[in-house]
Every structure is written in structure tokens, then in C-alpha cells.
Length: 418
Ligand code: PLP
Image (tube, rainbow, N blue to C red; front, side, top):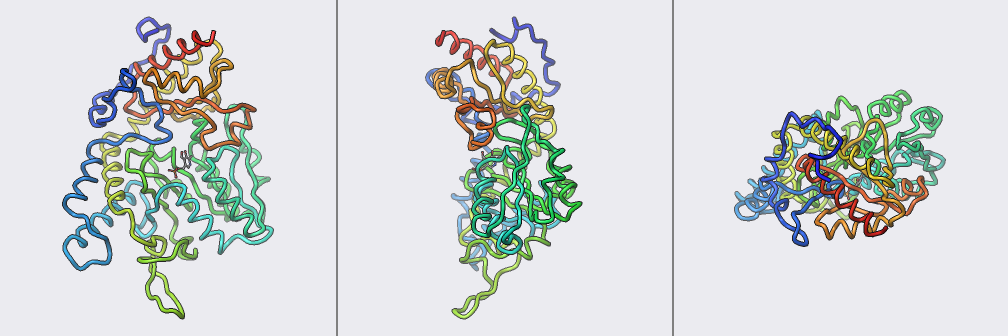
């Protein structure tokens, strides 16, 4: 079934993004003799040539450890790293570079906050509020904290469309709630959560909020001042940047009062066997040799994404999502999980009673990369009483024709299991 003879009249995008595909070398490879269709962008995105070149240029021309050298290379390396911090600050519209901490990714950023904030502000009998649709990395660090401190983990549920039950939020925000942690976009259901509204409600009771931006950071422009979240975290590899680099944005008023997470070089001011004093922000939270080359790669990725137009890319992905949703729902026996009114380009589904793993394996043989399983959100899968889903997560470099290929392939899978 190709787009031409389909019954769907999708409105072709006013902006074409297909020419950007040439920026991503991997997109031109074949898998099992078929042109690759990469629909696993929720797990990680592909990297444009400019990011790959930054990494190579850094290794070839600059590489030296940062912050500690008096020599030219170290000075240049440090400058690139601190420039990257400024690029992230500007990308998020944070007030100060001291509020931008480089970590290894979203998971590390959340663990940092759960430990460093938790040590100071969470005590026996207190509560931490998360939601039912969190990624394991926004569940387990809080669980560990609650166990350590004798606190309670509370959960805001979602309904069968995959929308948070916001009406339950006021009763869950109590005098004992110390922090709320919520994902901006669900990596399994695609739901775009009303995080601004959640921040507003929590702040009305002086409760800080951590927003997990792992999936949300590439869905529209993020402005942390406008969002007013106390912490915002994301991973470089999910926004066209390198792996092993991520960001914790935190309001200075919180970061200042939090204890260090890891000890080591760079995070100290003075060390003696009697007492150690800590460096100022953001270095207090950056122990050891930082991933300075990753940071430079991330800065290139953020500049690249900004230059192509984040709002336009998001609008295009939204069109792809609408088109894919229409086409997939036309397949008899296909059920989509996550039908929220506001969604990012992530579609979880099951095809008849075919195990998601089988569907994924066969799609792979046809050159189509999707993810199968619980997507590190076991409570979401449990909510629906299923074993897992097949997840297609799209990016601006995907095309309507690739969606057609997915639909055709799924019809073949159905045929094979008939
Ligand atoms: N949060 C969400 C919503 C995610 O989708 C992911 C990864 O898929 C993470 C957190 C963890 O990100 P990372 O593995 O890059 O630390």
C-alpha cells in the first residue's frame, strides 16, 4: 500500500525536511539489503556530520584535559568546554552558566538530584511524588532515596488514553511532599504532559519540580525560565548529540544548598585530611575528568538543531505522527497505546496477538528499526496488562514514505501470522 493509492489525504508539509537526511551518513546505509528505516529515535537519535566532525577535530587538534593545564591545548580545550556550557545555557534560556551541569546523561542527572537534593531536603516521613508514566530512571533513584530516608514514594496515575489525571494532583501534593519529578514527554505513550501547569500547582505549595526532558528536549523550544522548573534534565544522544554527555539544569537557589554527589578532582576548592571545601557552581557537581569532547559535540548538535528550526522540525514531526497514526489505525487488529490529545511523534502499538518481539524481529529483516518491550517503563506496560509494545519513534529526518514502508511491512507480518 503506497501513499498514492491510500485513502488518506495527508497535507504535505509546507517545509520539507528530506534534504537534511544527507547530513546523517548512517541514514543512507542498508540493512539486510533494504534501505534503513530508522524509527528508534526515542532510544537514541542519529548524529549529523557536523557533530561527528567536531568530535574528530577535537581529538585531532585540541585534545587535552580541561581546567588544570597551563599549556595551550588545555586552555583551548577548556574554552571549548565552557563555550559548550554557554551554548546549553542559551539553548535552554537559563539565566546563568553556573546553573548548567554536565553529566553523563539524563539518568546521571536524576541520580544526582535524588542524592544531593534528597540528602538535604528529604527526611523520614516525607514524600516524593512521581507519575505512573516515568522511565525507570525517574523511578528507581527516588525509590532508593525513599528507602534510605524512610520517605514515601507517591504516584500520580494516568488514564487509559495515557493522560495524567491532573485532577488528582492537588490531593497528592501534601505538606510532606518535598519534590515532584515528572517527564515532559512519555517515551512509551508519546504523551506531552502539561509540565508548566504541574510546576505552577507544585510551586503554589513551595514544592520544587524536576522535569525529565529526555524526550521533551527535542519537542519544541525549551525555555527553563518560562517553564519555571527547578531542575530540567536531558541526554545529548537523544537530541542528535553524542552519547555519554547530558545536562542537569538547576536553579542556583537549590544547587547552592545541595551537597556534592561524587567526590574527586575539579569539584573541590581545598583538600586536606582534616577537611575538604568544595568548588563553586557548577564545578561542585562535576567530579573527575569531564566528557569535554562530548560537551563540544553536544553544543554542535544543539546549534545544528536550532539552525534547522526546532519549531518547524517539531511541526513536521507532528504531521508525520498524524499521518502514521491514521495509516496504522487503518490496519485491522492494530491497537495503539497512548492516544493523548497532546502527543510527540512516538507510537506504541500491538498487532493482533502477535508478540511485540516477533513483530520487531520481522520488521528488522525488512530494514525497519523499531523498539520492542517495556521501554524501561514497566508500570506503563502493567497499566495496560500487556507484555510490551512495538514502538516507532520518529525524528525530523523521517519521511512519509518511510511510514508507508512500515505500514506495508506490518501488513506482511499480519499475513505471515495468518
Ligand atoms: N527518561 C526518559 C523519558 C527516557 O526516554 C530515557 C531514555 O530512554 C531516560 C530518561 C534515560 O535516558 P539515558 O539513558 O540517556 O540516561
